[in-house]
Image (cartoon, rainbow, N blue to C red; front, side, top):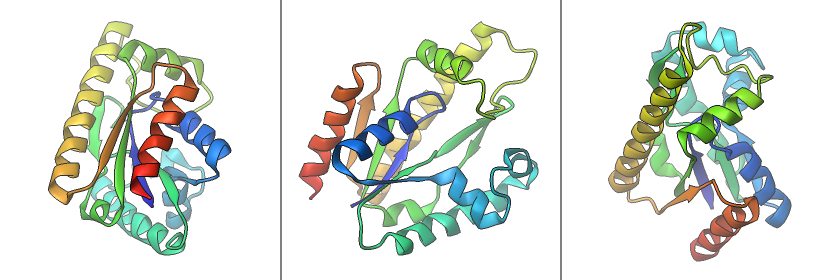
Length: 188
């Protein structure tokens, strides 16, 4: 099964997917890293942000389709976004290629948790906010970003008839892992 796993920055996607991999061995693919490799700019987030975003979206569609071919004979979890928040602007990252995946998964957390996780992981080059934004503005923006992500997630699931799972990633990591395993077993 090929899973298209989305969630806003700080929702804990990467940590959760790593734990799922360790528990049941399913392959995890980092979408942004794959996109930057596809574009020939590995690790260069700044170059990616400076590109025309319509071109980036088209290239992401090519990358997502390529990954299905590359992993066609094995299960994998694609760690990605359907919306990005960059310098205070929400940018679409969805398209018809999502229909070719087997299921959608949304990882969520409360805005305060998101902001705490983002602040604690200062090593990641996220560029989500502008420098003048205060904490209240950031929290409101994260709440809106997550609400818009969930709305689009639901629309995509319904439009493409894809099974979906929402994981509230506030509880113990093992509980979130088990939520995925239960879903995965129903998909097999």
